[in-house]
Image (tube, rainbow, N blue to C red; front, side, top):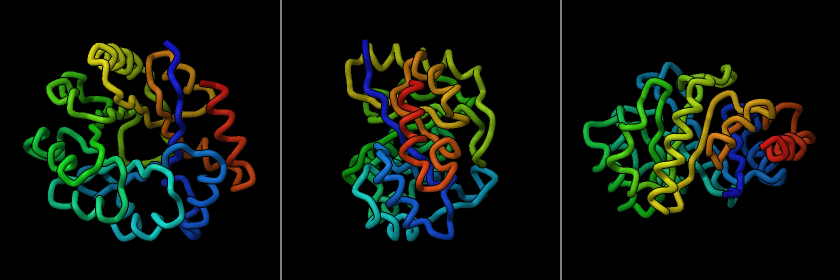
Length: 221
């Protein structure tokens, strides 16, 4: 079955000195989602953005803000990111004691809910809550830093999730993040992904290159 492929540029690879302009430029270049990687230097070994930054760039784009929270504990800060402008809020099963409760909290706040699976987290971790989700994010690198090499061992995980999602018959995004470029994009799409998170591959070359970068990812997929 043909699937529409969407591209979600990760602002982790943008120029932080002019982040608002970067968001505007990648929006104009044809991004489908704006992917925001939030890291707490606790759950993952890096520190990036807080709710105030999300709020500041929210006015720069009307695209879907796809906010990936690499934070533990995650529950207390969910309302802050929703208020800041997140449209999709994605959490990790390991980031709190009760995954189902966390998903319901996101839904109660009026937003779409996602669950992210690290390379070492099995598909089984998401299956009990799959029917409640709007997005499943497969990490094809270990979270914490941009610019890492794609881990091909995640491809069977993507395929297994595609099968489970199709069996449910629900419109759940299957997103992949980590080392995505024109060479790896065809592999993850063939396995069943339909949303590509791209950092360096989307933002390289400066704003004049962004539209071509996104077009190349779509063409490869």
